[in-house]
Image (cartoon, rainbow, N blue to C red; front, side, top):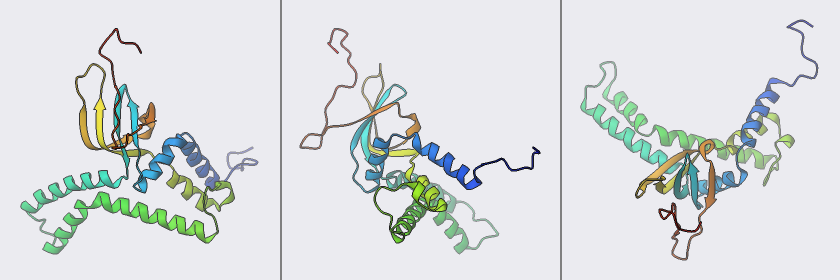
Length: 210
């Protein structure tokens, strides 16, 4: 068989693409993935994460929380650029538009993602597919897009506390992005009627019972 001869029963490039995406999504924790999706709808739960020996505690939140923080810093850089000299090949209006686009680039990209997701939902509704879907029953292009949007590489936490062994106290952050692949373990936090959780992170008493 020559190199140019087709391989018998070979799958198409589209099927290869779908298999790769499916393999990526299949290695994600379905429980955690569902909580991330809930957080996208502002229904975030408080969780604890184990990351490289550190304990990270916070409430799952939509990615807009981090986009806002990033764009705040981009806006600061844009203000510095306004103080400097404008490029000679640009008009005042063109330069201002460039700086404005730069200041909101993160939020704009996230809005585009949301719009694409809404478009996908609309297409699924048009073919009468709702609820839990099986990609095998969808057109190939629609199935690939659905699997892509289902996967989540990062999660966003707000009101974060980070504790590390042998360190006194904890670090507090307003918002934090975590790569899902770096989560060694996680657990939901039980809150009391006041919305607070109390637990012991690390024991400093060697004689204390486990």
